Image 1: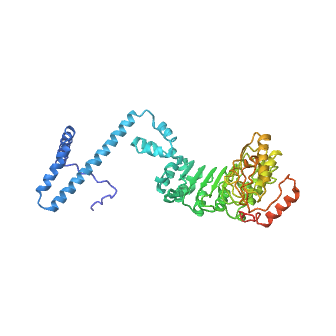
Image 2: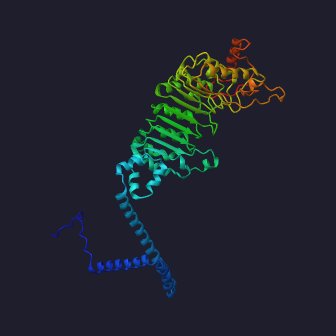
Image 3: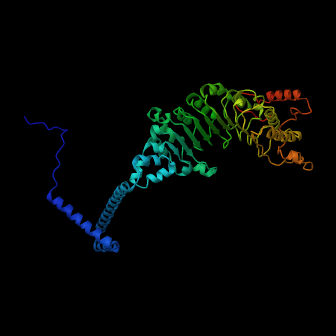
Length: 483
């Protein structure tokens, strides 16, 4: 019976025939002779071109000419690619012999470069490319300096290359130019690699900074759920409701320490307070020490945060609106006021002068003991009741008193010059009151200040009733301007 051939058995390659060997040797000699002549005499390159033209002129049929031209193109392309490969191989061999650092030390140096410089180094030679491909070199990805050149596949590749070494990501454009932001092609889908391998890639991510990306709340929350070790989150210029993002953080990112959410570009509200429990913030995020909310947020939510977040050291709500400053009342004796070191209320358009006055008085009386930096500057001035010039003088005096009695506090209170109101510019305030730079507003009714000649208790009761009637304590997540 005939034997059955084994399909797994490798076939023996036929030895090269003598004719093939002779042809290869002849080709090598011909190419070597041509290249030697071209190296010795640079004009040979021009002669080759002229020779090709003469040969084409001597061929009668156009089809034969086309075939010859295509053959010349293929030959030149093959020769060019072979020369480039050889040059790279020689350069790699040369760099390996003269480069003074071993590979592990080179990788350590590359891991300290910014991401754009790392890409430039990887493109220079194969030696650097191999070293730059090490996962540790992509532990800290920062592509904000070249946002217009970055695409989703590029970011995804870097995240996959980093793997479990990934520690921080910074993506997006820091520019405020609307045309640049609109032309950006980077979306949150570039972060989908964080959920690969069951979320192992994003598990050790500690810092995430996103600037002006095209993203929706659902996709962003899905990505954040994979970043369970996140300690620092900054999201700027993204058009979405932050209440969903905060809920995701409270549920999944329990090591969070710093949060910055900024929708001032779109003037978006934070969302409904009914959907967000501050108790979750305290229970699930005990390490939270810095919070920046630059969006439409009301006194009710701010009051709850300042009262309950006892480990909070920095609160930045600069540029926010829809709150009047009522949350500052009576918070100096408890809550996070015992630990708060930095409070930034810069350019809050609805911040009332009377609430700032109460706050400064509390500081002078010894409350807010840990406070070291306060910014209550406003480029448009604070809101004061129509015609109440006494508030301007009082706030200016209290600023001076804080600087005198609490020298450990750095107080920023920069305001514009007093603007004319009621169409009467003849009776401007004196220099002492104009320094305060407080603007008037027709939107508030007149009320007496604490400590003024009027009855303080009556004033306080009226303010409380007014805030209850106009909806400032509603559970809408942000308050409307009082009338």
